[in-house]
Length: 362
Image 1: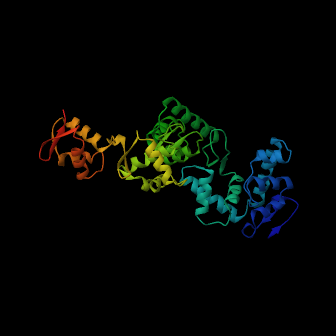
Image 2: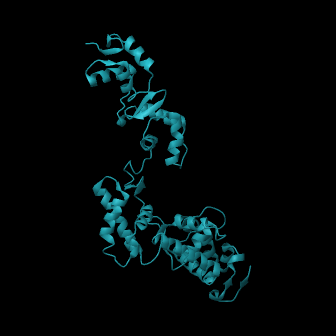
Image 3: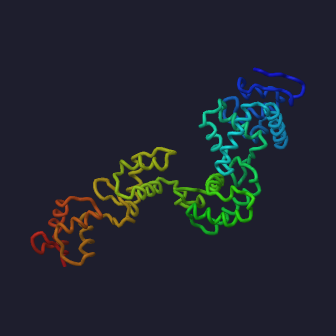
């Protein structure tokens, strides 16, 4: 380590390029070092929330917060003039400005990591960013997830906007197109805060929506988590969404891979998909050999003879086999031979009018 230690930690110079951040913390007081090590998981273990730390060490909640604040201030003084440290912050500010001033914590850290400019871990990058004054840190509260933002944005405004968004959808009680809603928000906020240029850009709102705890954005729609079209949690809803996107009948064994394309968080088992298709036959229709379509597409399902009855009733006249096969394929994928067999088998339902022409039996 290249430390030049003096009595005043304001004058300690740290070569951060040849030193791990956790080694720098030896110049913090023991309790300060403990809190930062646990809070940011710098010892290779999972980070520990402050609540668990103050309970574990029998300290008050307020005392732990004081120690954290003092530790961050001391840490900042130790590395504030270091070139690498400043480069991290400059890059973070560039990213935030390009994203119109706002990003949730994990998004900003991921963008820094993906640049491959620094050797720091994700946890070390968080510590560097949170200890800075130029990049503002919004701690998680009951409305907003942990985020970073740049002035002239400020926390009270972001909280006010969050409450406005939530109240809007509680009254509306249905989802809305994301960009349509962004236009609505711009009218209500950018004109009242003209000095904040970030509020005039769509990307700011896209990033901001990601931070709101009780909101969901999906498929370019926004709404409350209770709305199924923006928060399809069940496998039935995921199948329904996927089939609507494919917009054509599909074999049930092909569906899991298609579902994962839209919902990559978890793999879906073939048997699970098949069970849902069978169970929800009011939504999904087995057309032929386990190829399924949606009832909303006009498929009603049923056996071949039932569909033939519906075709005759719909047209109200005798029809030749070619016509019947064409209409049949709109509901169920069956061969002409299957159609002929059913016409001949169910003589109580169908009658041959002439060669190749049939009608319903009166």
